[in-house]
Structure formats: structure tokens, C-alpha cells
Image: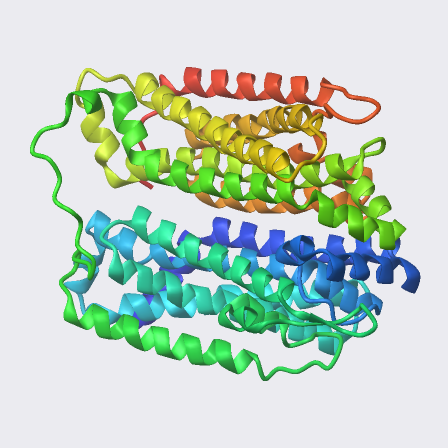
Amino acid sequence: MSALTTLVAQRVRRNRVTVTIWVASTGFLAFVAAIGVAREYGTDEDRESILRLAVANPAILLLRGLPQGASLDQFIFFQIFTYLALMAGLMSTFLAVRHSRTEEETGRAELIASTPAARRTPTTATLIHGIGANIALALLVAGAFMAAGLDAVGALLCGAAAGAAGVAYLTVGLLAAQLFRTSRAANSVSVAVVLSTFLLRGVGDALGTPGDDGLHMTSAWPSWLSPIGWGQHVDAFGTNTPLPLLLQLALVIAVTAAVYALQSSRDSGASLIADSPGRLTAAPAFRSNLALAWRLHRTSVIGWAIGGAACGLFAGSLSSLVRQAADSTPAIGDTLSAISGAGTTLDQALISIMFSIAGVLAAAAAIQSVIRLRQEEAGGTAELLLSTPLSRVRWFADFLVVAVVAVVAVLLSAASVAVVAVIATGSDSSLVGDVAGIAVAQLPAALLFLGALALVFVVAPAWTAGLGWSVLGLTFFVGVFGPLLGLPDAVTHISPFANSPVLIGDEPEWNGGFTMLAVALAAVAASLVLMRRRALRST
């Protein structure tokens, strides 16, 4: 067996759980979305009302896709493709960094380089494994669409576009691993690129030119700067044009060439962008484990808080635009009410939707904090800390405290900016109270993710990262957009976001919030007890 074959097999085995979760979750998302849309929007009139809402409201295009027709297949592609490509991109970047920069951080890359495998073979093995994972994702997405009754050619092209986006982001992750010295920095930059290009695609769609029938859009140039934008321009189930995928191929070739060139010119463990020199001694404010945990998290917390502020800005400033669109198309109000719940005004509905996304960002901040625990453990730095009088429980608990701070920071930034936007746009002052209530309602779901993943970290640490991100992505879509897609209540309420307390409208209630808080507290308590007896695990 050659060195390349051995390394590919090693990557397949090492990622068998996480890749399976990502691929299966993406395929499941494609299937339930197709079934839900077909059931909820079975008539042309229903689909046309939603498309006209999207064309009239740029905020929806930021989070959706490019309207290209009202047929059922085209409508499903509009609703779900960008999220499928987003999940493929996140899976690929995490996989790329794990088998490149993380290997160098732990010293395993240097050991492999001393064998006949040399230095380039591991990168080639990572590329082959990543491409294989995205091919599996593409085939499962295509199979899910065909099982839901969609056109086979369009389904295959949609799957290929999602997989191609994943491969493009795989090379982005490999490039970030060459540029930055730590896996944390490489992962952060890679995820930022994926999310930024998702947003860039949305900006391009929002600035596009509507068709005369109000059912089509021609995107603006920013959409053509995003691999996700290239994927959606294949117009699956419409013209079925595979040519935009050549842009994906060109990007993959160019970035891969840059990766190999950089890898040949640097030492193992080095990076193109050097770390800034640190202090010889810690400042007095950083001489505790809690302060260290905050220092490790502060940059990511600030980043998630900025995302929350963006949600707050949209929530507080777009209400007038939504009211105008609803006046011209009454179905718009019905659609927003279906998402946010009965008995809400249009302003409340829009704020509720945008804060649901802020709640997802808060949960993501909590998840990243727990994953940081796993990185500290796997990298050996936790072992060094625990060789001091610091106990395992105290080390673990301090990171959870910082995670709670991160959740609160995201929601507080979203609420603060939304309040300012409401006042600046001259909206009804009563919305200030609604903003506060809706922000508080997002806390239980985010804390539930924190408690559940903390327990996973203690019981099955190797599953922490893969399970955390994939479950968040799936429950985000099912919980936030399930009512719009007409998914069954039994499916929608699997998501914590669908069970968040309702503090606005005709029938406010906290039952779901109390239940999630109780489960979160129980999970945290159990994890703290079990952490007393758990040994550190590097694998």
C-alpha cells in the first residue's frame, strides 16, 4: 500500500463520524425542505406570492437565493440551495484545517514528513479525502431531491453545484492553514471567508435587477465574487447551465497551486503570517484561568457580537420597507406571520425573524467556546495548566462562564443596535420593549446548546466539533424556516429555536423557555460532576 493510499485511508477513518454527520445532515435538509415546500406551496399562486415578497424585500434575498421562476422545482432550489452550499463549505474548511495546520501544531506532520510520504503527500491526501466527501454530499443531495420527486437532471446539477462549492472552500481552508500559525486562526479566517462570501452573494442578489414578472432576478456583480453565487447561477431546474461551475474549477486549481507553492517554501510549523511577539510575563489581569479563557475567546466573541449587531440593524431599520411591500402584496404579511407566530404585527414579525438569526449566532458563540476546550485538551495545553493547582472542574467551569458571556454579548449587541435603529427610523416606540423581550427569548435555546455540547465534550470529546456545528446548522434551518416551508410540527419542534418562548403577540408564553433552561442547567451540572473523574484525552 502506497503512502498516499495509507494517508487517505487514515483520513477517512479519522473523520468517519464527523463527515458522516455533515453529509447526512445536508442530505436530510435537502429532502425535508423539498417535501415541506411541495406540501406548503403546492400552487403557483402560493409560490408567486413568496417570490414577489423576496423580490420586493432585499433582506430576504440576503438570506435566501436568486428567484428564477415559480415552478415547484425552481422554487425549492431558490429556498434551499444556498444553505446546502454553506454547509458543504463549513464542512470542507474544518476538514482542511484539521489535516493540515492542526497536524503541524501537534507535531504529527513533522513525523509524517520524516517518512517516504514526505511533505506534499499529506496535503494531496487531504484534497482527495475532501473531494470524496463533497462528492458523497453532492450525490446524497441529488438523491434526496430525486426521492422527493424533483427532476433528475436539475437534482444532479444542484448536487454538483453544492459539492463544487465545498471543494472550492476546501482549498480555501488549506490556504488559510499555510498563512496562519494556529489552527484556531486558520479556522476563524476560513469560516469568515465562507460566511462573507455567503453574505456577498446575498448582497449581489439584493442589488440585482427584478424581472418584469416579479418572479425573476438578475443578480448584480457581487454575487459573481462568491463560490456560492457561482453555484446558484447554474439555474438548476431551469436552464440547467453547468458553465458557472468552471469558475469553481478555476478557483480550485489556482488556490491549490498556491498551497503547494507555499508549502514548498516554508518550514513545517511555520506560517506566512507570523504571530506577534507576546509578553515575557502575564499582565496582572491575566493571571487567572478565567482571564486566560477570556483572552483566548475575546476575538471570536467580538466577531459574533458584530454579527449580532448586523441582525439588530436589519431588525430595526427595515420595518418601513416591509410595511410598504405588505401593502402592495397582502400575502407578505401572512408569510411573515407564519414564520413568527400568530397575533404579531409586521414590525414584530420582522424583528422576531432577525432575532432568531441572532439567537443562532449566540448559540454558535457558545459552541465555539466548548470546541475551544477540546482544542486546548487535544493540543496538550490543558495538560500543562492542570499540572498546576488548577482543578479540572475549575478549568472546565471557567470556559463555560466565558461561553455564557459570549451568548449575552451577542444578544445584547443585537438588541442595542436594534433599539437605536428603531428610534432613528421613527418607528413605533413600543417596539423598544418588543426588542428587549425578543432578545431575552433567544437565551434559552443558546444556553441549551451550551449545556448539551458541554456534556458531549465530557462524555465523547472526539465528537465535540462535528456534532456541535452540524446539529446547529440543521436545527437552525428546521427551527427558523420550518414553518415557512410547511414542515410538520413534529419535525420543526425538534429544533430548540422552534421552542423559544414567545414574549410578543396575543398569547405570550415562557413554557418552552423554562423547559430548555432546566435541561441546559441539568446538562451543565452533569458535565461538571462527570468532569471530576474524566481523564484528559488527546484523541
